[in-house]
Image (tube, rainbow, N blue to C red; front, top):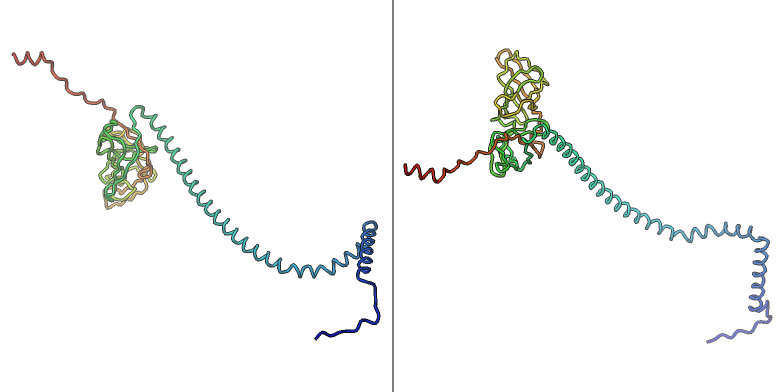
Length: 298
């Protein structure tokens, strides 16, 4: 059922259209006056102070969401950047090690080149192909053989001193017995006083023995031993070892002397072979036909 209300007894106030028109005119007048005289600046500042907390409260959810999302985005970005930097550091470390290795190898090759100039036309550069797997034998295989005029018995050196000796020569490779092998012996002399001796390889890796030296022999720790040239295998003056330990006991006739090899035994890839530079043996000439026939007839 629709309730019927009686009409208002009095009509109060202007019509909506009239009110809209009045307020619109007032707004226009206030804007014109404010534009010319800035009368409402103080009012706007006061209103902004009152409205500011409401604006912050209204923007709080959006600000919180932006901060949370920015935190997670920053964390992911930092993790990716950290991983990228770690990879870059690792790559730079590998490049640095490679650079240091190449730099050291270049310095060593320059020393080898200087050594070659000391032995003109008697030096063959070679490179190590493999090492012996026998723990009791210290030998290496190099990439030069009889085809390159390498012969057994020829000394092998590096940029510092004696490495060993060629013990087997094959057509395209050779076996080199290192100085520290137990079957190796090298005639040497002490640089300080010219005392001659023979150093032998030892069962201890990286150590040479200097046996049969009297306990009163004039030899000291730090003495440098070089090849004496006796025997004709090694040229004189090549560094061989440095005296590292001396044990003298009156109960024994000889002192126990240990030496450290001067050369980089087991450390370098490129070596030099000092060839004997012997001319190849000529093949026997066949006798002339006339000579054979004359002999046969005779």
